[in-house]
Amino acid sequence: MKNKLIDGALAPFIEPLEINPDSSISSDILGIWHNQNLAAVCVRLKGGSRCPHPSLVGRLYGKSTVMLEWTQVAPAGSPFIEYCGSYANRWLDPGYYFLEILIIHCNGFGTTALAKSRSAPYHNGRRVAKWLSFDYTYECIEDTLHNRLTGNNAYLSIASYRHGAGDHRRGRWVFSDDSKFDSIGFPKQQFTRYQPQGCRSQDPDLQLDRCQVPMDNSLIYEFSFQWNQDQQWIQQMEKFQVDFGPEFKDYPPLKTSHDFHAEIKDIRDGTDGPPICLMGCSHAFSLWRSMLRLNLGHRFVNSLLLYPEPEDAASRINQAYELYNCTTFIIAAGQWPSSKQAWDNKNYGKPFSFQKFYKGLSAIAQHPRIFDLDPKIKIYLRTIHLNPLGDLISDCGVEKRPKDWRSPTVIDGYNLLVKEIVDGIKATSPELRDRVHFIDTRFITEPMWDTANDFNHVHPRVSDVEALYIAGKILLKSDEMSSEKMR
Figure 1: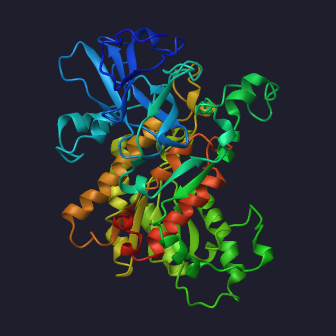
Figure 2 (figure 1 turned 30 degrees about the horizontal axis):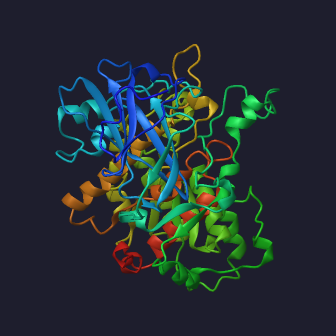
Figure 3 (figure 1 turned 90 degrees about the horizontal axis):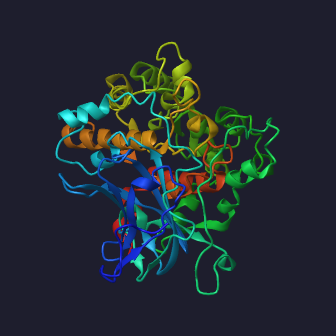
């Protein structure tokens, strides 16, 4: 499907891109193009479109794979709606890339605009207050069969090398098999994984193409993570690693971090200090399993925290402090609040609004019962993992609501608030600014956001990279991991 507004009269740095005629909003798309000067891909929609505030996810596949960062750019009063996804801060080689843009929600809950708004804190302002209290319980995602805006031949060219900026300079996922490119350098098409309805292990259709093709996960094995050559901290991590012998190499999956610490109690030398506490549920446990594979399992332990409830968190942190003498806590509690577990919980009966999530996590990060335990107590709030489009997230059903709300749109909103909480504490609380920190692993996890084998937990290949980075942020001095050391 051709662009309706792009022709040869436009500047030479504009590349028109193919539109998917089967997209759920194809009739509203005026054009999709690549602006090489701006290092961005733009989507223009008609005024009065069915989805004037869409939640978009964009990804480039080529020698490396990166996510686009979206901003609404059309000025107020425009007869059209325009969004641009930037790759300006990404680490990319020149060459051809396959572009995929998805619409997740027709209503993006304002997260795209708020991500770029720094004119007022989140707790002030009418527009922000409206977003925080927005009830997305009955907001379904777009049909996964028709959510792709770009066509099968949406290729673009990047002319010059891009070094990346910020965390995106640290590392990237690179394609490890040159045979996947054709003779003139075009990569093969790559489409986002999703789980159709009726494609679970017990379903008779599981082996049919309608299930196997969209659920294929071979992509994860075609990419490997490349750290920037100046990331010397990786070698320094060796001093923290301990190999406890072959019996711990394939540690039984049902055994916990507590089992592990009990079993190594008599063989560890005790010089490495108390363990660091990973607070959360199964995603935190998956991170600990990665620490175990990295020979860092002895430095970390799990502690359960399902919801961002301040008093529950304070009690659990107190328990971990008494049991393991933990003084460093890494917290992520965003999976259960946005899942069917919150709906089924009689205390909630619905997923957490952004306001409820913000208030709870903010109170935890400043709770006197936590910080009065020990002057060495530190809290790190880490980003929450995106979930692939599993069948519960995409199932609206007869109730006209999702069965699970962990869409990229919702988790993006949660992560926006996680960073805002830490930024706010550092700006306004002198007594806590050195005790509350933010760990952002999205540059590692988001390019591979759809590769979770079970459509929930981060794939081990991705989790291992994330775990190494988290361990470095905690165990090494801040100047040893400074991004300023990178070229």
